[in-house]
Image 1 (spheres, one colour):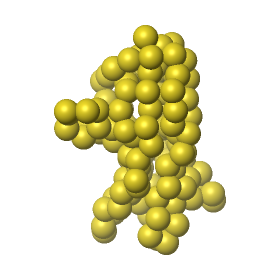
Image 2 (spheres, rainbow, N blue to C red):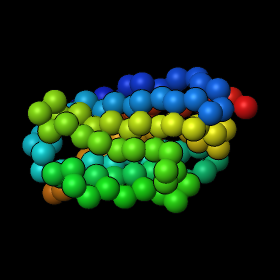
Image 3 (cartoon, helix red, strand yellow):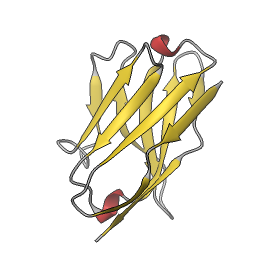
Image 4 (cartoon, rainbow, N blue to C red):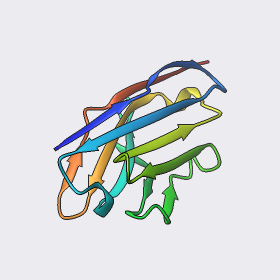
Amino acid sequence: VQLVESGGGLVQSGGSLRLSCAASGFTFSSYVMSWYRQAPGKERELVADISSGGVSKNYADSVKGRFTISRDNVKNTVYLQMNSLKPEDTAVYYCNAKWRRSYWGQGTQVTVSS
């Protein structure tokens, strides 16, 4: 099983980034996929999740209207489009797959400068 995140980096406040998480080794289309983040000294928090079929999506209040989660069940990839980024969005972003088991990626750093 592998979840490989990419797309993180350094961006100025107000900018955009698109994170990707490529999955392999399990039946991707059966799993709820989520993005979490963890800032230094803080607990890991749920940013957004998407149902297995991609119909249902949920967002943390702090990112509603700015972030969009999507998935491609042919490419076995989940995305997080992040717009209007703020310094408080700075964190390591993790991809999670959950159904019968829970799998985590290694994380990708997002840094938003003011």
